[in-house]
Length: 425
Image (cartoon, rainbow, N blue to C red; front, side):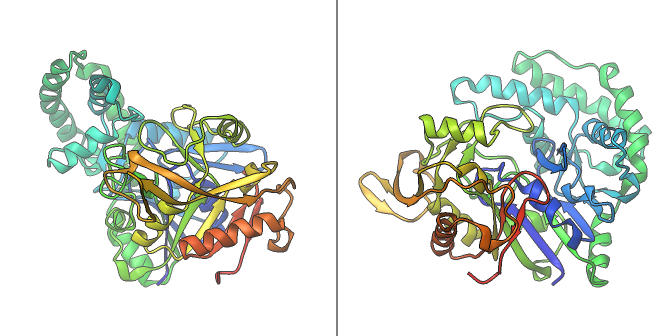
């Protein structure tokens, strides 16, 4: 079982990019398995901070090979821009990157439809990134998508784009949105297709063969478990399965291969966009967390809603994903809080429950437990024994409430600001 799966335990933005990068020394291949350029995984090494939208985070480690898996929807223009940005910084990865021939393309009409649909929702807007992710998955499920394999067939791609655009313009006009013209984007699409064609191959066979050889594979999930289209707070969810099942399907790996399921969670909670958020703090604490934690979307720049750790939601996410260990991030942001709160139950219509509800989350009121805070600066702590006793007590409470050990604590944004702990809770 040489495969590790890593996913977000909350509503995304948990710091997965930093954790994947920190684990990079023990990885041979890293796979992005779902989502698209709506993800923003931030990695900081020294004084350099990079936000990766499609490229797997661990590829900043020079020995790691990367795969953009079959479950990802890929904006080819964004991918080339990301490759060029890294190259300008001296990071050349194209000879180590594979783009699955089964991954589906995000095209300009998907972005236009995403914006038009979100605008039409008005006050009921979901809060999408407007990157075209939802419409691209809609086409995929409707069996009308364009797989990345078409990037290697420019003549067929041109004919398909011209044919599909006529139908997409009918939809855009129905939303009172401007029509698109092929001459506005087709030349650039063909240019990037030529650039990406050498990267396109059968990623599933590649990964299965690598596993058979005993290579160490990490599947990197995007977004978070509570945004899963099936198990999240629907309809305020993303368009893909962020669940372990989505990571497996989106990479082609069989369940028996996975030996570790690492869930990344912040020491508090955040959420971007609309949707219920039981532990949200609308006062000074939430504002303080946002400022100290730099809680602004790495993809959209939108301010994140902030609140206390939600044990009910985390326990649900851990149980449904078979989580074996937790990486706790941004513990340093809580330094200076005299009291740290943890939600241990909900009250819904006067009834107390520890179950995460499917349809009644908007009526859930948090039941908080208060723990002692700490004031120590954590950014120079590198050993478990150096962590403050109050933080140790918080970690122990989370382990008890979730039923999973915390094996890593992030004490700052840099790769080196990481404390490894024992796997036994």
